Length: 114
Image 1 (cartoon, rainbow, N blue to C red):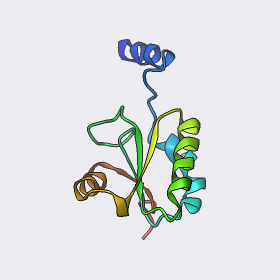
Image 2 (image 1 turned 90 degrees about the vertical axis):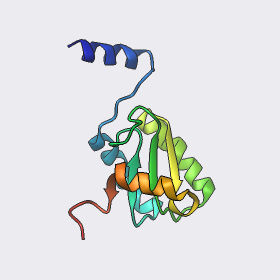
Image 3 (image 1 turned 180 degrees about the vertical axis):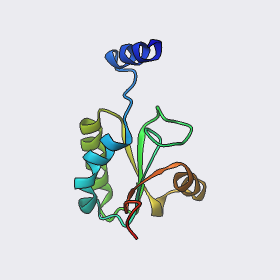
Image 4 (image 1 turned 120 degrees about the horizontal axis):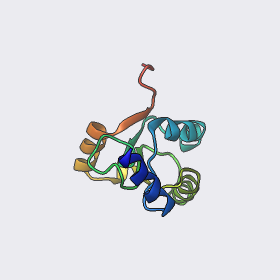
């Protein structure tokens, strides 16, 4: 299809990297214990919000230091082939929190966990 052709061409030039939710889950799930989150959402990137082509934003209550978060951002950007930002719940603005919870995709705890 024309759309598939256009997306393929954009990806060849490095202009886009369309990630699927399952791809992100597969890469992130082994790292969640290290991040020490009691919750983790994806915003932007692959989420339902207005910026599906923006950076991948991981929103959670991380228990690791800012330096470790920066290292994670770099590592995940390499692994996923997409700019990744980590947003800590305690250091973000209230409107972002509301948007993340509304538009984000919950990665952890998984939806079937109570």
